[in-house]
Length: 438
Image (tube, rainbow, N blue to C red):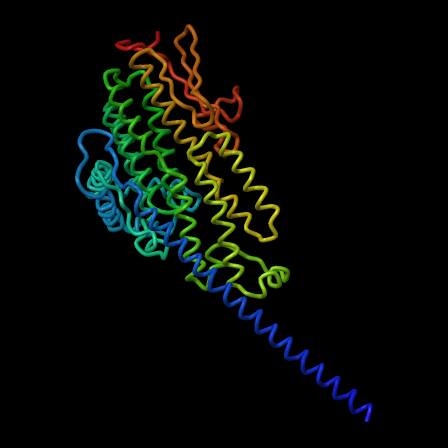
């Protein structure tokens, strides 16, 4: 009998153990489901909050010159987009490329610009762009809709319009119409600002490229001795307006966080859409083999990085760099591979600030040419813009810059004899009513 009792006891223990394991497993599954539901709900609420906050930001702005026109700038821009698409077969073909990137050869790009400029609609495209920058309202549409890929501005066509407008400005300059040329360039820079503020990081990058190209052209125009001195006041005023509505990098970072959250919520192909790849079994175990829990954790890390950087985007550069270091430490100490999103949080911060620095260097130039006095302006990378001059009438104003900007050291705004990070503007300090240095 004793062996029978032992067997019964063992069976009873086995049954109890099995029931306990089953109960524990059910409990774990229930816990996972609860955590998944709560996490998805949290992402949804956060995305809704980010997009609602974005819709409540001021959409009005001051025009560069004159009285603001009624209406939304994007109504004019969208009409210009439609004209560009129908202007020439090449324009439609190039919707597959980014015109300012390596995807198109210089020869093809030049031909496309000539084709569009030669069409009867080219002037109308430029006028629609310029009408848009005069509008009092700038609203590109619902961010939630754009995040789903619907109604997003065509980035290639934005670049196309900018290139054609700058081509027209160069033609005006060649005809001696320097003020008109400068105003087209400033309108193009404003268009770039509107494009850059239109939604997410990709459009911010396109807008920044347009602004940078326009500022390069404006620099070449304003440093020349032939620019009429009686127009420097207009230039100074318009540059001050452009300065006042510079790209809001912090807002774009929060918009981008909302876009990433929506992709995680709605797209089964989210790893490809976010360029995320991680097949480590360790992560599968850590998140109980739940892809949902991994997505929730990923979003929380990204949101924390983006929000931290957005909060300091308008602070001093020292504070911004300190934020960069904190994000770096957090990213590299985490076992979750989201480093690229941490880097994305601050990768363009210096680049966007460099555009603001260049605008202020040009403001300093116009003020000095007009009055002979130095204009005290804040340096986005330091305290105040620095300046010097010599007896020969050579004047230099510069920003200390930062090596993290990622600009080409040989570009227009660099001097090989100065520290590599400096953003430099050189010109002759021609007094008012002078014909230029002898």
